[in-house]
Length: 622
Image (cartoon, rainbow, N blue to C red; front, side, top):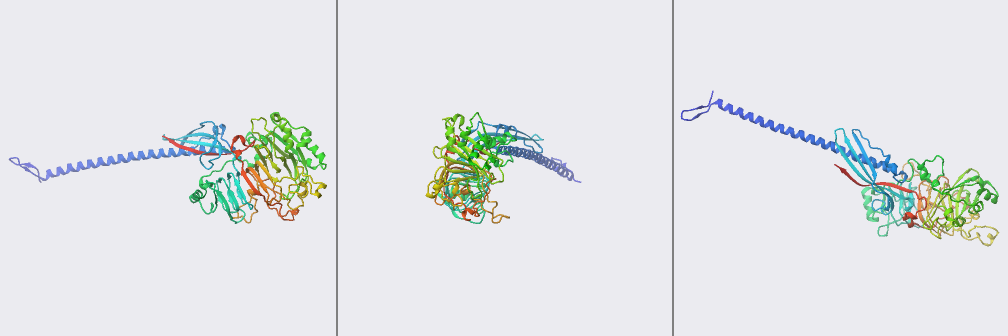
């Protein structure tokens, strides 16, 4: 065994035992150092795990808060079903729920609603009633991790008559005759465009797709043009089938400066002014005792200040004079605010019932009309406008039956070139005529002194200016006097004469009416050779030979529902009165949006609105 010893004189003697002791100490030292390193590593890992777990929980809380804010946003969006977000809507918002989290939310308006032009988004350029709203949502988990999200939201309420065209369902614009349209075109459905000569001078928007084709058949005509931002018409040569997503956006920007916009560009549907699950036709339906306050806010019948109920059985009276007398004795008139109703004598000058008035080629029947003489109405109203002037007249029928005497009741407005003045000189006034049945407009309307005007009905048909205001056909016909051989509408000469030639007419009014749809898209399964509904070009209907004659229309074309009473197919070729040749030829369409409607004070009375909710800002709070 070796040991360490000191030799005499100070020398050292190395032994094996000494070396073993040194090795042991070194090993122990290394073990201690490794232990420290391992413990430090474990501590770091533990610390990192704790930090990572905290970050993970914090991130989850942030996502929960953002999701809660989105939930509130969706509730506000649903509240826009009636066209506006009210204080009651905000008060009844439901706090979001999510397993493992507790939420709190605070939603409030940040300023009073302001009417101003929309400056960004898909509908920039229109004006809206803007209601700014702040949404604050906090989420907290069981471990105390908390996050808060704040959304700034703008609830926009847009008057419907700001659009040159607004459709709730698919919109087809396929004119044969040349057509130039100035005004914003929007549909909440798909848009179909095909024509040899159709030019659109303003924006076109849809939250769905645009198809450069017909809906009823595979027919693509290359004459559709859309103005770019410089006002130059550019030919449409693509659609949502040929280009999707970013490719569609890029082409639209290149060709039209983004003035053709679809879902690919973030266009949102515009919600109609209706309670949830209520059909759009509700707007023109009669009053009902069971209508809730929300429904009453929507129906034009409840908005009207002159509500007229006609007993359709009066059309069964054969003698015309007796019929006129019975009509004014039997109608029920309700006026609000102490406003007057006309005397019986005046009533007979304003309202005249006509049984089987003329042959209606599209419906293949003879309508029973309430003729409203707008000139007589104006003369009576203008004599005392503060107590007589109407703003919304609503006409409905009861006891309509299946006999020829009352099978198709409708309203016709005639001699309406000048409308009644307003109740006060400071008011722009205006008049909305509404019925749940079909409506006919005879000759010029609202052309002498422009006033805000709207026409709302199940369907809208325009008849040209007659040869004389009375449309009288007597023995003088033989000599070509009055209705004789002259062009223009004449009730008694529409049948069996072959498409009497139109004299043309001019109309200044917004139109809200039902339309005739093409039932399905030929390119989709289960759809084979569907009948064409007539499209926008036949949304205002015609019954004469308008070939080479211009129909001048300035207003806003709105269709929210399908016609319920005027069910005759477009292009009816079984019309025996016209030797199976069809019942009309199309006019030259000089149609445009009425720019007066860009000003809130110039909108027609009772103008409905659409709404959308837009997120304008988002920020997390830490």
